[in-house]
Image (tube, rainbow, N blue to C red):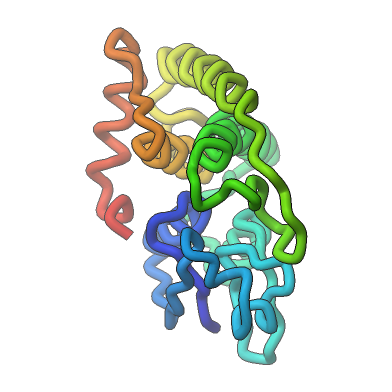
Length: 211
């Protein structure tokens, strides 16, 4: 297998942390999103959508989307179980991961892409052959959504060590990477969110956080 990566981007980081937790080491090819390398050949031959991360299998099969990659790897390397250990836990991981993805990751992307000059005509990913102009009004909406994300994190983490109980899962990985990505838009965890601050210190101290 081969892993197509971009070190500064939050979605590839989610997959890297997931792999690091499972001690999976793959050959990696770095692709520069900011300067549009993902929108040109030869990468478009690998992935016509221009999305990262992308996983390439030994038989030449390629697929993108972080959760597709992680579900595939969870099947091959089931320990530790990062997508849940029981039916209820798997459902909660799916639900919480999705919430962190929309209100943390995507909201952060709205703020970043609609305010960054390099993305002025490619404000959404997955459209390499189209001009998609930035919409400045989405910056305020993104910040508003991130506020809800922080409130949800604080409330959830007031009841448990991690987002889904006592074990670190994909839900934590997505929320952790969202907060890391927010540094690019100068958004931090609110100082009075003590439970989130405690959780973020803990997940940031895991060896996988440096992946």
